[in-house]
Image (cartoon, rainbow, N blue to C red; front, side, top):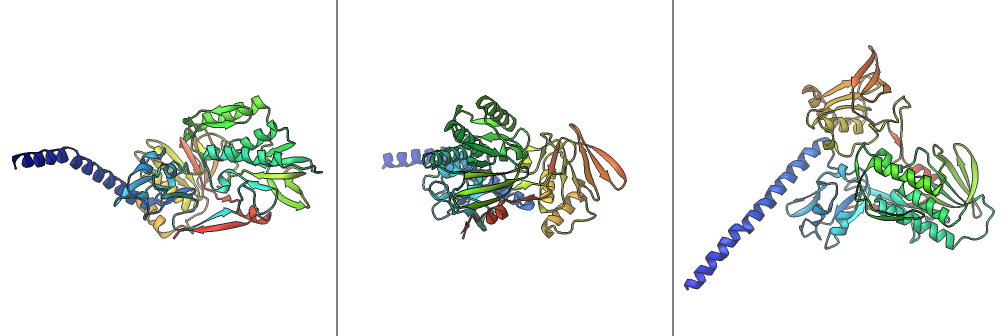
Length: 433
């Protein structure tokens, strides 16, 4: 009897020393995640704006493996014992959470949770319903660099193996010079194909839209004609410099600032029209991403690295002077999100005299921030020039120069769906219940 009591006492002590602190730690984490989730709902940053994890609550066992695996941090959290999307706007689609889930309860989807996610219909070779047109990378639903590179090389290898004699000028035309497009171009060069790579802006693709010094997480990838890239943590600038070195060393030719405006197929040949020329190609690889083309202001200094067209992580910006340009929901949400960070000076510039189309919720949050002097709104203003440490606004009262370290431009953009529809590429819809 005494031995039983002693055993129970020891067991109770062990539970008190191990299990109880563990449970308290779990509760603290959940409480922190819940608070963050509710705080982010104020600015709408809890919702994903691109690729994101969709968690099957029935399969989730609440182990937290997905939370720990996310390289961005705090995208996921455990609420009520289940994995939950906490900071959706911070997710950039690594997919490591899905890989880490031991029960396969996570899939990566596009669009906001609870809404449909349009994706092109592709076969195992990443070919669309239009024979000869392939889609790789983010446009096909995967944004991870490793996957984009793998898809690009796989498609070009397949094209090379099945290439038949034809009368087109090029064996393959590659649209986009991000990771998928670069890999496709390098593979085409390695396989001695007659190729052309077109990029409507500059080399780098979606990486160009990342904020300055944003750390891009990548897994080791094998690039044709170059070898393995072993980055695990790399800044935007370092990655772009590496792309340029690869292009220079391999002599890969890329036509930048050349936008494809139309594609027509006659028999087995594609007639392609760009902003600069017309030519024919036998196969086409679309590697242009799905975020759309951000509309630029066309002002001096817009090429500076402090300028970006998307806010992914407001918490990365603290103790700084920020200008947000635009009058839609995206601009207002970004301004509010930045204003909630520590010691930020946030200015919102809008060319009209009032906000006409923003959601009531956003108007309320904006008014609250303005009332607390966390945001200064300058109506009837336009960016005139962007400098290294300042920005010049053209206002009704004359030019106004503001101290500035970051500029976020939300002037709209052109999504690729209309283009895909125009050239006959079919989409399917997956609806999350």
